[in-house]
Amino acid sequence: MKTLTWIFLICLISCQAQNNKAMKTIYDYKVEDINGETFDFADLKGKKILIVNTASKCGFTPQFDGLENLYQKYKDRNFLIVGFPSNDFGQQDPGTNEEIAEFCRLNYGVTFPMMGKISVKGDSIAPIYEFLTQKELNGKKNSSVKWNFQKYLINEDGTLEDYFYSITDPESKKITKWIEKNKS
Image (tube, rainbow, N blue to C red):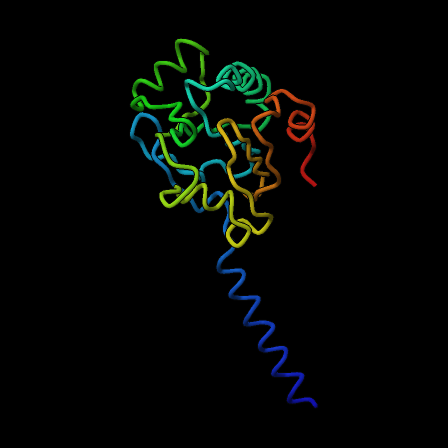
């Protein structure tokens, strides 16, 4: 019986070690920003992060205003928004990174970090969005990006906490309460 118990414990420890290997945090990722520079999420340790896939020609595009307001209100409170332009839904962001950056700056005064255009779904999904949408990587939950302006919330430890679909306004109580909540 003791031998069986030891075998069980060894298997349990081995399985746990394999699961821990797959688990990642946002800090394991580097991406290219909209200007072609490396953006290292490891530099954001200790911050709450809202990640959003954006598009310049979408019915939700006016959410840039709410995102910028949110960023301005909370940027000095260990909070950051990171935008990822994507052309995955209705080809609503066909421009180049330069055109997207100019559009965001001129039309919405965006000052939060914008990354280079990526795919947030399908066979060409960017690794950062694999992390956000796959429980085996984020340790929290599976999801799929349904449309532009879906919001992912990353806590101060770099782990996924929750996500909200496009219809959730960036300045909603759900999001502002999360930002204002102290680390547990």
